[in-house]
Image 1 (cartoon, one colour):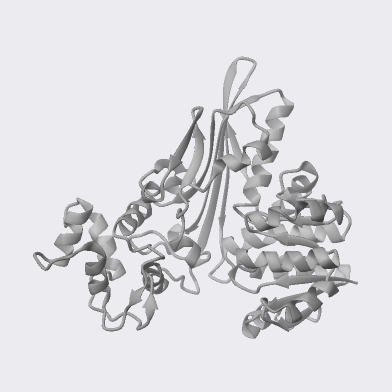
Image 2: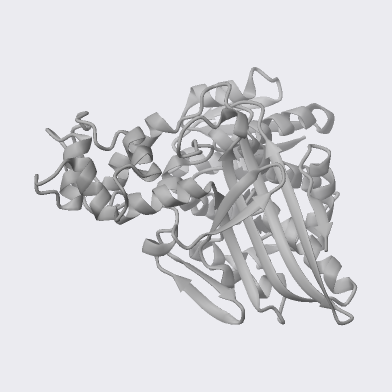
Length: 442
């Protein structure tokens, strides 16, 4: 009997827990799902005899550590800053750990101790980061095998709303952690472009986008994502001139979000008392309004656009100019904006989301330039069974299965899935669940 601890029963856990429960009886597994929300756990386990409910406060060692001690492997779906708590417990009790989040500095510092303990702490094992690493490295390694010299690599991914559920002017709904959407790009972005390091500050991230057409997904735009350079060594592409990791959105979304950013509405540090204020008065405070013209005219002038422009319609649709009272309290602009967007961008139960990932690689072989595009498009079934939940959760669940059934020997250290021994069997398994890439070679 093996025990798997799943920490977190939020949006991204549905496919993961279902997959583990589906395989539990055959493999004699016990699946413990730990979360602070008993209803969320109960919903995900759905009375399965191989599941166990654990309602805990993840921050309390007395709640958390006994569960880690019981487990053979731990999967953390908690917010990124909480992984370290589980990581320390896993190191203490010598348990392998899987997460979908970026490797934090704290986690990286544990690498030596994790290796000495002979443990696998596999991070970045979700969608992006995760599936992007595995699929990209599969391509890169196959090109290296035929002596190709890679000169350009672009990897783009987006959690989007499917066309049949796209019914607002922003062409977007929340399919992932809403707070992460509001804070996207805050640290700016860095990438390599034609041999030169390019740094893009936060206030230019969303204007710094390029358009592209993807069959099956339509017209999209991409903006650079975080620090692409940190993956150069891990991807083993020493000759490369262009190396970019990016996020996909609808072009209108990028234009609209740049406007919100320029108005200061995404700021996380401007706390003020909201009692007695409305959305309109908040906008006036943020943009220096002086009662000389209509608010819409003032905003159009601030953004240097026509008052009848599509962008103004997008802002009005959000309700930014409405005299609707704000929730009383002490909040930042980012908090207020998030509260508004949760009303406007929430998925209906029947809505379908769409995950799109595309790698574009150029390489030289025998004097010829070869271009490869590799594309994955997955649609969800509805809000609960979303493409985002599937692509974030399934890689972690599959890795846990392959480790517990001895089909993968766990590599040791604090890692991401760029090694053949991990990504090859995982991609084979995930293909059975519709997670596949279509390649076009020019």
